[in-house]
Amino acid sequence: MPFPDYPVLLTVVLIANWPIYTRLMQFFFGDASGLAQALGYWALPDLLSLIMNRYWEDQWAEFRLTLWLILCAGVVVAEYRLAALLLDGWYAHVMCCKPAGP
Image (cartoon, rainbow, N blue to C red):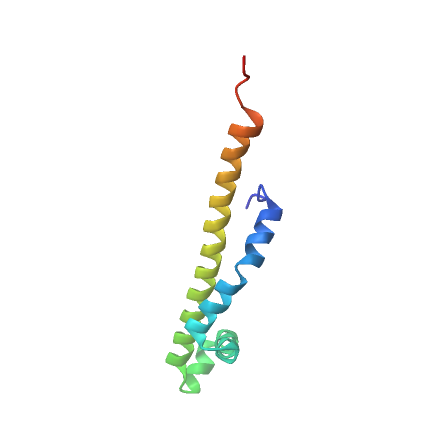
């Protein structure tokens, strides 16, 4: 994986999206205890959850956790790519390649 062109921008986007992460967490899990329960199911082997008669609860919790992580990462990637594209365009047109006046 290549190193990001703007690591500071990536850090800012990661931190600025904290409210989005928490809102998605509330949507998928209700509260932090629901997230902790999903993490517990993720750490629990499927065979053990099958023996404990909680297999489908385990699968549902793991699915919600995976979807939450994908959405959080997708928001960050989309915002970073858009901001990097805007910064690259701004740099190319304003700073670097501005035509010289007469």
